Image (tube, rainbow, N blue to C red; front, top):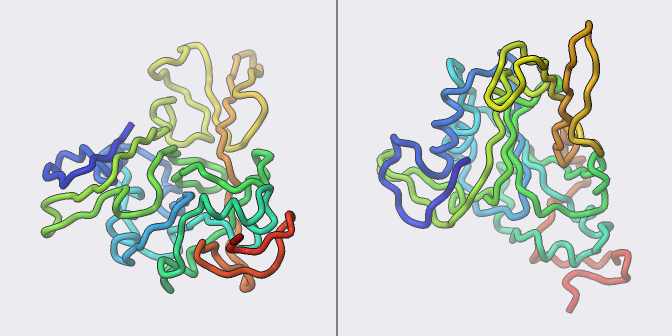
Length: 270
């Protein structure tokens, strides 16, 4: 578990708050070699005013840390899952769903354009529902290297910004998140079968983790006379996410959209 704190926090090296807390935890985490090039997928319901250096260096450094691993600060390594204008218009709630997706047009800075990917909740039977969940993860070849469920949207206020040459971290909002790590389940990714015991797990079981969304949280099967428990990890959106097409526009709530939604409404509605 990690948390954010509403104040300027000076104990940066201790990694107690914000993205520095996540950096501290992940830097001690052994991951598969594939994690080196695994994209960081950020899915959120509010987009702050981001600085390129903060997102693609400071923040990414924290969330792509791993034990003994290098860090490649390139744009292709970050994927932002954010609904398009058309997805909001055709959603279950129509344009009104956009009122819960705060993002002014000024926050859609040019450097973000190649990073945007479409929200797709069809895996969890929420294809036409707009998200309010916030998740952050890294994945590759069907393997989930970590998964985070949090209250923190994508902003420096929520995650914190390093200041004064990295000597302090400024966090402006209270946030709380839970970080799911493969090592807790005796593995280096959520898609591998664990062969060694772990906290809270039976020593007589093998545990296999798959990235999917299912009706049942887990199921048992017999493998070579040994019982194996396969746990379905409920990632709420499609992996890998689909990159925006040339005609896609990221949602911004101060826009003017005349094409009618399913309720015959335009945006704004007044």
